[in-house]
Length: 94
Image (cartoon, rainbow, N blue to C red; front, top):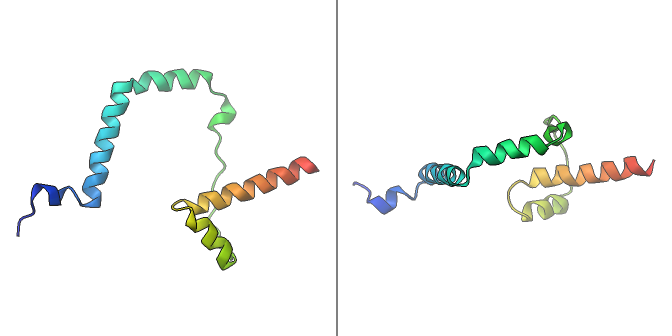
């Protein structure tokens, strides 16, 4: 059975392609290249630094993990952010 036009567009991969094309058109309309060039001129080297990520196995309490997951996707990033804030706070206290 052949899918209708509306059914074809509901596949996640199709949606991703459509979203990517829309983003490209939006960036082009905004003059994205000009914005990036302006941003690069005002940035410092430290602004481009991103710490290297290292995969680890970490055992967390179930309620702690559930709390982070309740916030939706990218819960691992939020856990990392919380740990970094604690680390930086302790480093300043010394």
